[in-house]
Amino acid sequence: DGGITQSPKYLFRKEGQNVTLSCEQNLNHDAMYWYRQDPGQGLRLIYYSQIVNDFQKGDIAEGYSVSREKKESFPLTVTSAQKNPTAFYLCASSTNRGEQFFGPGTRLTVL
Amino acid sequence: GQNIDQPTEMTATEGAIVQINCTYQTSGFNGLFWYQQHAGEAPTFLSYNVLDGLEEKGRFSSFLSRSKGYSYLLLKELQMKDSASYLCAVRDPGAGSYQLTFGKGTKLSVIP
Image 1 (cartoon, chains in turn green, yellow):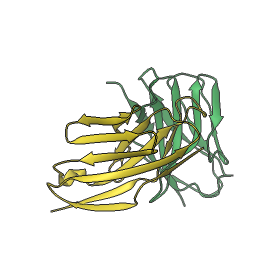
Image 2 (cartoon, each protein chain N blue to C red):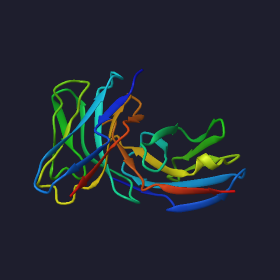
Image 3 (spheres, rainbow over the protein chains, first blue to last red):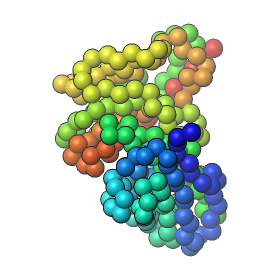
């Protein structure tokens, strides 16, 4: 089955720690994205990548980092510099038409 | 950049029809998407419009007027499972070529 997987589903982190969220897709899509969603808010773009070994900052990239070493994988690191990291994180990949397919999401809580 | 507006919340009765509006102001336009998002879950694709007019897909239809910067999602024969947030998203050709900008979503509550 083709799709996007994210792990873990729930993640707890202590303040001051970095944490990496996994995102894998087998849809053969070139473009991948990371979004953050807060309660009652829309999706805000953190980073996106249109091709392997290249990525661009979105609207709220501060405190986050990404890599794109393989077409299938686009991990997101939430660093200790991110001041308010508790949120629902969604990874997506897209077709050439722009239709985005989302993974199930990771809910990150900072303790 | 893009500015996308949707109503925050709507309530409708089971079996009825509801229309969710979306207006956008953009520097460019290359398609509009509607997504459904149930609480705590990921968004799922509903519809895509790039030309003016109505696209119908079962109980759901989506309309676009590019000259007015306006779209709506029409849901017919509402069911309780349609209770969800509905996100309008516009593709911006000026940014990353496949990048979408999302509205904040409309939370629809379907009541018996």
